[in-house]
Length: 219
Picture 1 (tube, rainbow, N blue to C red):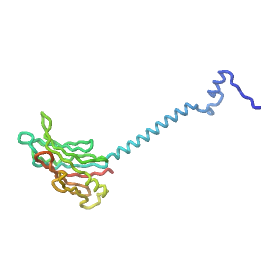
Picture 2: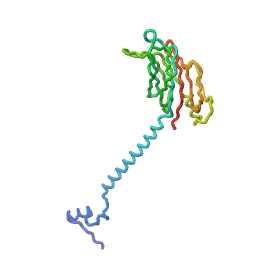
Picture 3: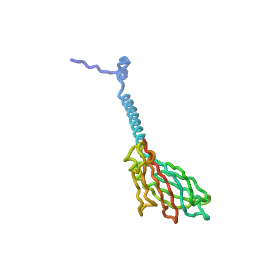
């Protein structure tokens, strides 16, 4: 018959619970200690996994970049006494970039490069021309939109164009529904995808803008 050992005093019970009769190397970690360690490791693992996921999503938020050369404006609208001080604002998604101001010039030549990133779910590139005023709100001098799909679709279809010869790979057609003055072709020039755009400004009495777009893919 197997006898049972009854721990009858609080002192002995405490000694058995704390394993004071065992060598330190043979003692078993308490359940609460094990849970605490596991919890910390789990949090660290989740944090690390989330961080890696966030970094990956951030790098894939944009599909490329546009280098936009604002070439010149022609016959822009008068908003001051006989002249205007024009500048251009480009907007894509939540991004906005602005050109320099050309003082007292209705036919400004900028030849200025503006850079803007292209998000995965991109829409048209919005363009607005304003007259800069020192003591009042800037006056609008016209606007237009540039459809980016013909250029980006062609660029992605051809992939690495650095080894291609000069050639046309796409076209944005002039219609009554857009601001184009003439068809705008997408070309490979010296290995780079470029597009010249000639626009008639909308919602204004006069004005034209010429730009050149260059597609820069994310490697």
